[in-house]
Length: 73
Image (cartoon, rainbow, N blue to C red; front, side):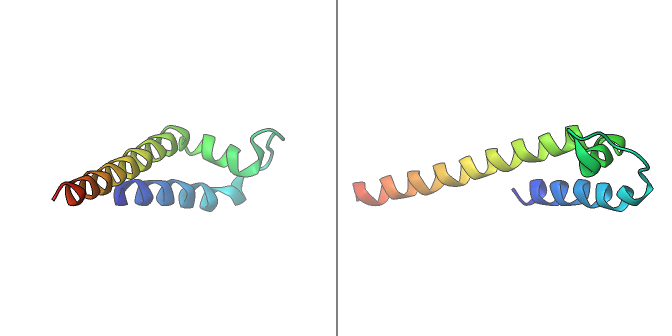
């Protein structure tokens, strides 16, 4: 889960650093979305979201499993 946060932060930081060099952008993606596309950060952003979701699900499963084990004792 920590790696997902680091990946997500670094991709967005690189897009923000690139934003001042953008001269034109479209309304649907906006300036930040255009910077994210031009720095090829779309796929890593989705990967980090998937990793974060999977990490959260694993943590929730472990808490649930621990709670069940405590009830059975």
